[in-house]
Length: 133
Image (cartoon, rainbow, N blue to C red; front, top):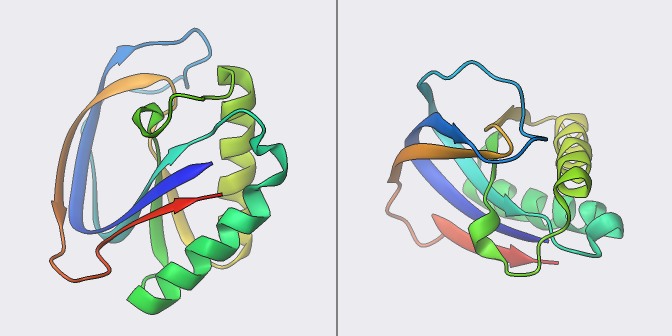
């Protein structure tokens, strides 16, 4: 499991092309979130037992930054060892549920879509952090 944490002033994305049959059913519209951490997330083969460890890594990072708002953004480009889409989608749902249970305000970008993306990253030393479990 790989997660690139990015502390952002804002992120805007708009789903443009449905890439997978198992993609989320969504309304194609521009979405914008402000003052949060974006968790660009790739679920890899064998990640079934790694969610809790990644949650702990993220908790540590977000505590240092002082943020309780997070957007989980499926991002296959972080890995060349991806889990099958059905498994990845299921594990992302578990990941999101556990983040919510930890008290975070959690949002999710749609799974299985190409998205147009615009992000403004904050300029501090902890603004971008890669976590691999």
